Amino acid sequence: MNRLITSWGAYDLTRFPEDPRDPLRAWSAADAYLLRHLAGETGETGRAGGTSEAGDAGEAGAEARPVDLSGTVAVVGDRWGALTTALAEHGPTMITDSFLAREAARANVARAGFAPDAVRLATTDDAPPSRIDVLLVRVPKSLALLEDQLHRVAPALHAGTVVVGTGMVTEIHTSTLDLFERIIGPTRTSLARQKARLIFSTPDPERAVGPSPWPRSYVLDADSGAGSGLTVVNHAGVFCAERLDIGTRFLLRHLPTGKSGAHIVDLGCGNGVLGTAAAVADPGATVTFIDESYPAVASAEATFRANAADSTKAEFVAGDALAAVPAGSVDLVLNNPPFHSHQATSGATAWRMFSGARAALRPGGELWVVGNRHLQYHVKLRKLFGNSQVVASDPKFVVLRAVKRNR
Image (cartoon, rainbow, N blue to C red; front, top):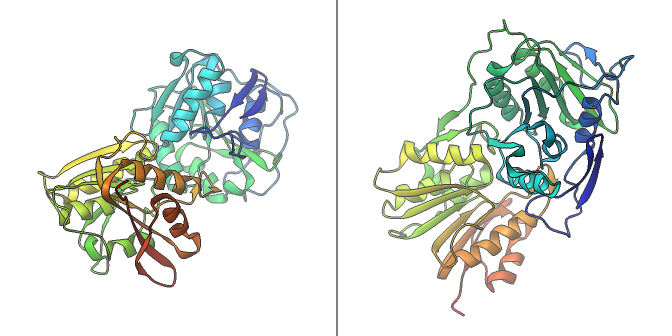
């Protein structure tokens, strides 16, 4: 837990799931910079020219004025709910692509003493407010996700809407500013402070923006093993949305089949190609697709619907790994685990997925994992399952199989 001190109060914030051993903060210098600006503590007015290099210095305004937060406030991309919690008294709508971020915001708002209905916790599956008077954007890692988010909220903006983005200097590039300029209106940047920067855009109601270019789809080639010929649908922000990542492609070439009637989980499903390929190979199976990303779950459902038989049973879950899956109810877990969370490299997510898989599997059930060889997932699997078999390997990737033994 760590404390964020703002003009509205001091807040003890945590990530989700809460882990007292986690050294990472639930807020950043970019969050703090934006909150100081809203309170009128920075005097930043920005630097004109959205197409200039993001590294150029901004110009400080002569007079600091707080932003009027009495209207409808929307917060897009709040990583762990720091902005939403600090502004809770103004009733903001938080729009997030992340289940974990949403749950963190829920916990942080409650810890700060606000009622559950003090804020609206919306996802990228939900319609944004019909009118937005103050739009705050925490710049995401994915440029595609930012593009889609701005397209979604643009119709709700008006000439008087205050639009402020924030991010670390390393996250804001010329392409970032170009998106704000093209979709919202004239854009400028602030001075960099504590390696963070603000983005200011002035909405242009006359601008013809057009629809979001997302989702996109492609067909897998003959080199994709069990996935060959499948149509893959990707919403913005999904891992490797433009093409199939090579780790997933490698696992598709060695995908276990003959699981008719089995309950299969595609864990960290992304666009759902693993679970869909399993469903196409074994139409009698029941497949559960799970990811903490709402766009990923939407992609998985679209991919499944485009390929699988109507009779195949499937469930689509946005959640924290296998936390919501009953113990001893699964026959096969397919997993290509991420080794980073919101840009922080960590093995914690993989460990949570593996331990959750062991609890969810029936005796004799199997966990199949693909990962980079250097991550040494076999060590974790042997510790949890007591066994780990190499199914296939190449110079970069390894496919591992662990079996839940009777105990």
